[in-house]
Length: 508
Image 1 (tube, one colour):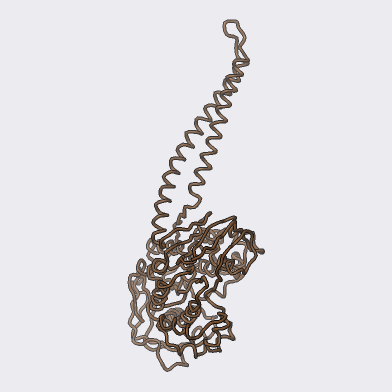
Image 2: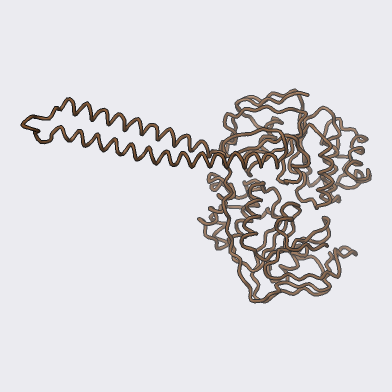
């Protein structure tokens, strides 16, 4: 057991005015199973990079352990090589037999090491990398969002695997994963860093109580400030009136005692200034109370109401790719009615995203898309209500580039409303000057979601919208969907999100 000491850490990117860390200090233990949570762009992945010495920083990070990071880099050229050839490049001194032991715990046969890495499924690639990561003995491991793009079964396997390990930092926005795998949590709040024992749910409950107490105390301060403002105005009024009386009428033929009156006016003015200072102190204290209260702003959306009750119907539908003899699925019967939120469920590669593309194709969307986007064959029937307006959130974010202004102009979105939604989802104003390609993956997903929320539509097609999106924003999205009850066809593997939002689950 050893400690990682972070002292007076300050860091910002050279190309940005944003200060990611500002004179922060905390201590971590290398035996902990530490969860890492916070809004997108608050510095979670950046901190992991700082631990690895990737960027220069001010302050000190003191550790007696080496660090290793998931995911390992896998360039395009690496996809053609066998996984076994990549082991030594990923981890110096990596022993293949140790990797095989870890693969067994992850439910994979050793034969995956002797296939081209690019032919492995997303889940298999993740498991191979995790097996390599945990095949060492002395490192403190940095695990960055291991369940993105994984189906439910693979997520459960990874969850079980990590819950039996220790000595790592886990960055994840999956609440179930955090609850199952960690015994300590580090949270990047709005203006502070907090480390405490327990899992995400215990931290959330503690924070809810603290925030409620802060809000209650804040209300007391508001009332106190009103009283102080009133008293200060009165004292200043009395001072002014007293001062004016120095040049007032003679009383009983006597001149006013200007010395006495001046003294009295000065006393009143002094009292006024004391009250003013007390008010300013109360205001500062009030602001401090709420500095870390994470208020989840209510998002809005604009679903349209279609005159038809059934918006989508599939009858004996089957889909496959031309190069494959195997159908992704066949004989699918599906009816999507107005107000339903249907989740497509199944293993990676079973055709969930392809079904969403088939709906888009049937609706006549994306005619300018690359041919490979529509490169599938259909059997059976897929029909949509006439005049259906669709809003689509894709898995792919690579098309996002240029300024926010250009993005909004191209899509007919009101820029001020678009930016307001992003702010509500925790994107700082300073980010708005950046080109979209410079955004983090979580911020790019928020761009897509904000566009969808602002688009009036009868049907919302969301394909893994929550990849890389922080926990707080996930909660906001849950609330807006429950409030407006849009008609949706969704692919999403976040179990807690699905439990709250789904009105129907369709297995593929």
